Image (tube, rainbow, N blue to C red; front, side):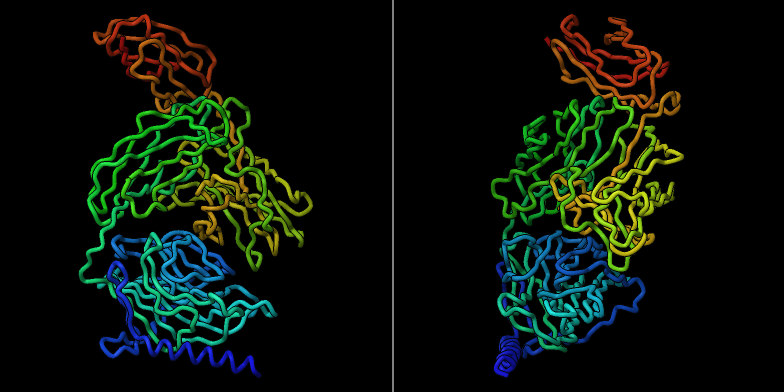
Length: 611
C-alpha cells in the first residue's frame, strides 16, 4: 500500500509540475516552447489520426531498444540553422536525424552523448513486438509537402515480469514547414516505468548536442495535452560547421576493387552545414590498410563555402590497390573553428580482391559472427540483403553464400538474386531463387548454393537476399569494422535500409568468375585501363589494367606531339591483367600519346615527361 501511495504521489507531482511550468526557453539558438495550459498563446491539443490517411506508412520492425530508418520527411525541414530531409524512428519514443539508439537510463536534453540531433516526445523504456501488445508506429507526409507526422499508438512500457510489457502510451510529433514548428501531442498515458531514475526525457536538441530545450524530465506527460516548440523569429547564434557528406557515392557504400585494376580515385563531397560563410579549409583524405597504415593520402584546400553550399573534390593522388585485403577510405574536414566535430568524418569500406583467381569471393564481412543470436524476424517471415557491385565486367555469379547461426525448428531458408533495375537503382527483376532445406543446412557456418545457371552481370550490380522459411532460423551478423553501408532488411517485396547497417554487416557473400572470350563487344576496354602514375614522370611510369576477357594480343605505341612513332612494343598474348610500364628516362620532356591496342580496339592515354 505504501508503494502505491508513493507512485500516486509521483504521478500527481508530474501533472502539477507540467501545469506549473507552461512555457520555457529560449535556448542558446532561440527556440521557445509552450504547452496547452499556457495563458499567453497556448497550442491547441487536437489529435490527428493518420492511420487511415493516403500515403501513411506503418513503421515495421520496431522492437526493444532499436531504431528503424531512414525515412524521408518529404520536404526540407528547417531545424536550428540547417535543413533535415530524413529521419530514424527509435522504439523508445524519439526520432533522430542521424542514426543512433537511445535507451535507459535516458539522458537530460540537450546531451553531448550520441546520438545527437534528436526530437524526443517521450523518450522512455518502451517496447514493441511483445506477444499480446498492440503497439504501432506510423508516419505520414501531407500532399502539400509541408507537414509530417509520426504517431506512436498504444505503445507499452517494458517490464521484466510476464508478459514483458505494461501500460499504454499514444503520442505524436508534428513537423511543420510553414513555420518550422515542432508539436508534441499526447492522447493517452497509462502505466509506469519499472525504474524511477532517468526514466523519461522530453525535448529537442541540435546536431552537436549542446543546444536544446527540455519541457519535461522524469515526469509523465498528461493525456490530452500538447507542447509546441517555436522557431526563433530572430537569432544571432553563430555556427561554423564544415562536414563530410560522403565518400565516392551518396551512401558512402562499400566497393570491391581489383588488385590489378586501375588506381582508385578518391572522390569526396563536403558541405557548409553551419550558418556562417566559411573560408577555405583543409580536407584530409587517406586510404588505410587493416593495420591503419596510410596507403595513399591527400590534403587539399576547399573553396570558400556559403551556408548550405557543398563541394565535390577529386583528390590528385589515387590509391593503387595492388595487394588484396580490407581497406578504408577516410575523409575529414579540418576547419579550425568547427562547432560540430561529430560530422567531420566519413569512412568507406574498400575490399581489394585478387582478380587473378579462378573463383573470386565478394564479402564485406570478416567471416566472424557477432554472437548476438543472428538476424531473424518475429513470425518467421522476412530476411536481409546485400548489394554487390563487382570489380569488373562481365562478371559471372556462380555461387551464393550465407552464414546460418541457428535453425531450432529445422525450417531452412531461401536466397534470391535481383537486378538493380528498379526505381533509382533499387531491386527490380528477380534473376534467381534458391531454397535450402534443413537436411543440407550447415549451422554455425557458411552455406554455399551452386547456381545451376550462372548469372552474368555486365553493368551495375545485384541485390542478394536471404529469407526465413519459418520461425527462428537466423542469419549471421558481423560487428567488426569497417561497415559496408550496403545492407538491407527484406520483407516480402519491400527492401529497407538495415537498421544496424552503420554498426553491422549481414553475412551474405557471392562468388564470381571472369567471362573468358566474351568478345570485343563485351570488352569496353577503355574502362578497364587505369591512368599512368606518376604522371608527369621523369624516369618511369606505369598503369594497371584488368580485362574482363582474355585478350589475344595486347600492344602499345608511344607517339610524340607531331604524331611521330617513338616506341612500339608487344606487351603479351593471351592476357587478362597486369601492369604496363614505360621507361620515360629515354624520352625528351614533352607530352606524349600512348595508344594501347587490345585485339584491334584502341585505348588512348596521355603521358607527360619532365626532366
